[in-house]
Length: 123
Image (tube, rainbow, N blue to C red):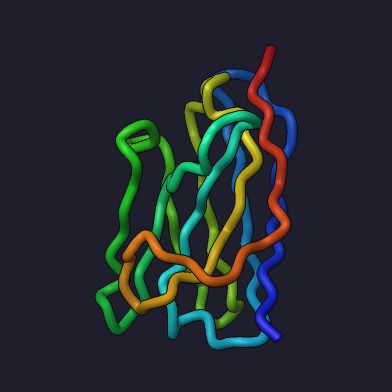
């Protein structure tokens, strides 16, 4: 059974940092792209970042809104994907989800989702 569990969310001041983790089970992490998406109530879910499998060169994607501030990485031995978030802004406040891609490369198509972790950026 595919399972994705996010952790690491919380309350942080503007300019601060958080690292989100996505622990995967029920499948081999490196057989799929993994994405991080976020959602604010009343708005559509937004893809923040994605990392392809090693066989697809582990290429990464970042939304313009987070480029230069967020870094996605994967530890295949631990079956975990991370999202390092630096220089956080109030507009980064959202529920963050990790999701399994339908393909080995980032294709903006996902078939399994975690339960989400809340990130709040506020002074």
